[in-house]
Amino acid sequence: MEQLQKPFIFRRLGAFFIDHIIFSFLIVIVAFLFMNFDNFDFSSTFIRMIMCMVAAFILYCCKDIINGRSLGKRMFGLAVRDDNFNIPKISKLILRNIFTFLWPVELLLILVSKQKRKIGDRLVHTDVYLVNNNKGIIGVIISITSVILVFICILIMGIIQIIKQSDSYKVATNYIKLSPEIKEIVGNDITFGYFPMGGIQYENGYGNSELTIKLKGNKDTISVHIVLKKNPNSNWIIEDVDY
Image 1 (cartoon, rainbow, N blue to C red):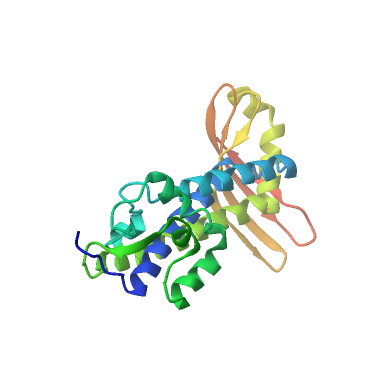
Image 2 (image 1 turned 90 degrees about the horizontal axis):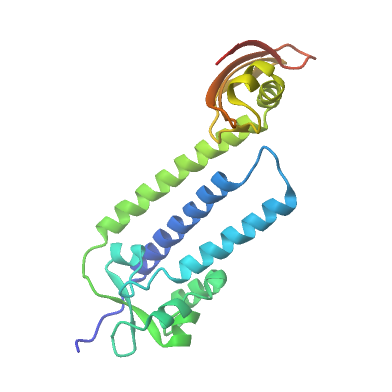
């Protein structure tokens, strides 16, 4: 069998970066969608976070099981192979990733050790080789695109959380919970959507807020548009409600 070549370090780092960006993004999305930030409970939230992290770790350990190639490795023309340059068993492909939580140590081993192998590869006698001698341009493009997309998503999520933690949003949601007219339409057990729309302006004690909040009850789902105003040394006041 033809002997495979070891890749240049930039390919390893590029594949490593792509895989970690993808899984980090998935964790953030899952946490954002399934955590109840409006009714925060530390114990239940902690348990959910642990479950999310365990599931993500298991999924990450399985990232190379298809022909020894994760998405990042495919983009950079790389693959995991054993000492005979064959595709390793699935068990080995999983075991080589169990030390992912020690990624700074593994990265250091790849960069400075003589074998250029991380802990998992040393354990199961595997390594990463170049199997497709492309120039990695696709990987570089996707890496840059991934960074931009992740930055945009984090920015949007950050803005949404700022809105949901603001006093005007809390006043608006309290009004909705206590409104008999809205309860008549949507019913009981009201839950709010994850993505409130609108904006908040605040300067020198004066504030204007315009929010569109989606809510769901046991009868119906509607969107409520609320306009609020704030003067210095006073609380937010609801000026208009439409639904």
